[in-house]
Image 1 (cartoon, rainbow, N blue to C red):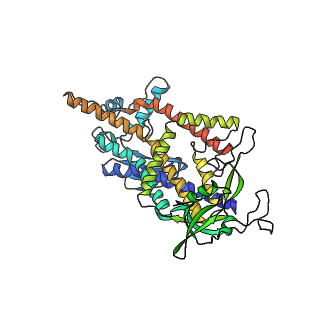
Image 2 (cartoon, helix red, strand yellow):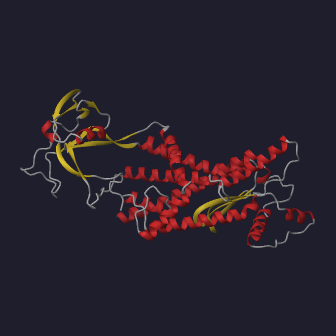
Image 3 (tube, rainbow, N blue to C red):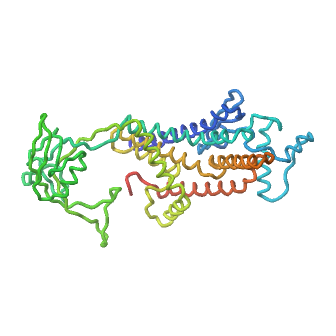
Length: 449
C-alpha cells in the first residue's frame, strides 16, 4: 500500500509539472496571438510527437520527453542577409562556410528564415514593438508565478496551516521513564504533573507562570524551561478562568537540529539537556490565513529561490561532491524533476491524514513553479530572460538613434549569440545531469537520512 501511494505521488507530480509547463507556454501563446504573431506550434515536451492536432494555423500537441515545452513563433529573429539577398534574386540561400559555431549560426538563421513568408511579412515576432516582445516573453514565467500564488492561496487560505492550539487534547496519567519501551502506566510510575495539577482535556491554556500565551509553543517553552519548579497555569474552563499549580517533571531530552536530527557532541554521542514536561497533548487545527497570504508566500519564496539560483553553479558543484563523498546533501539545495518526484512520492506515502499530504503536495508544486519563474528570468538565451534582454537592447539602440536623429538601426540579430546559447545549453544539461544522478544515488529525503 505504501509503494502504491508513493507511485501515485510521483504520477501526480508528473501531472503537476505538465500543467505547469502548459500554463507557461500558454503565457507565451496568448499574448503572441493577441499581438498578431503567427504561431506554428504549441508543444508540451520535446522529441518525437506523441499526439497533435491542428486548430487554425497552430498545431497543438504532446512530445515524448516531458522536460519542458515551447511555442514556435514566426520570425523570432530578423531574416539573415543571405536569405534576403537570395529572396530578392529568386534563389535559396546556401550554407555558410566556416567552423562549428559559424555553421550553428547559419543553421539557426535557416530555421528562423523558414518561418518567414516574405520580407514584407508583418506577422512576425521581431517586428513587434519592444514592449510587446517583452510581454510575450515574460508571459510564461508570470503564468508560473500566478499559478504558484493560486496554489499557495489554496494551501494557506483554503486548507489552512496546521497549528498546535492552546486547547488541551489529552492529559497523560503518568510519566513513563524515557528508557522504558512500554506505553502503559504502572502503579510505580509517578502521576503526570498536568494530571496532578487538575488540568483536563478541553481546557484552554491562557497563561503560564504569569505570561499570556497565544500558541502552544509559547506554553511549552515556559514549561520546558521550568523543570522541578512550581508555576501557575491559567486555563479557561466552562466559560470561566481557573489558575492551577503545575510542577513540571525534570527529564533528559536529546538536542535536535531544525530537521529533527540529533545534535552530536565532541565525543560523537547525542547531546542532551534537562527540560520540564507536564504530560499535556495539544489539539491541532487548520487555521485559515487571509486571502493575501498566498501571494505573500509566493513572493517570499521567490526571494528564497533567487538566493539559490544565483549560486546555482556552486550549489550543483557541492551536490556533485556529495556523489563522490556520500556526504549528506543540503536539504535547501537544488533538485531535479526526479528529486521533486521522489519527495512527492514520500509525501503521498507518509503516515499522515490525507489533508496533510495534500497540503504537502500543493506546497511542493507551488515551490516548483516559483523555481520555474525565477530560473526563466535569467538573462541568457535560450531562457525567456535572454529574449527579454535582446528585446530591451534593441529598444535601447532605437531610442539612442531617435535621441541623436540617426537612421533607425537594424533589428538586433540574436542568431549571432548562438555560440553563447550553445555554451549555456551545455551548462544546463550538465547541471541537470548532475542533479538527476544525485537525486537517484544520494537523494534528499523529506524525513531526513
